[in-house]
Image (cartoon, rainbow, N blue to C red):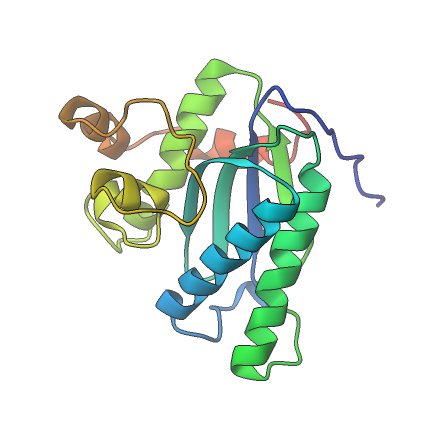
Length: 189
């Protein structure tokens, strides 16, 4: 089956996910993978600027919510994942692929889908029983925002979910995770 054509635009955000090869856990400790991802994101965004809204790294995949002001999602993602793969191979002397397939994406034009997707991304560690509150997961942009830590690229998370009310909303389990997963199969949601 051929790949669906990439919708390049600058107006709406994209929900992106990439999974490791064979869905296995990354071969490096997660804190090392996190550092590789941050450095790769910083370098890739120098070439292809993006507006990162949220990013969460799990043991075998990541979720990224971002906008591309230059409508070049494909170029940024190629650069970002390439840098991650090259760093993995240097650190681990790994000859295998880091990622199993090309990244999946969905353009988000619905405000409701955006809110649910935003919450879904930050709740990933909670669903995996790694933390009880989304803001406690250290491999997440939310952790940086709540703790006032500097992230290597500017964060464009201007949605006000860092106060007590917002964090309560973020931590309230969503019921329609299957709808968000289905959204990644669509070009636009």
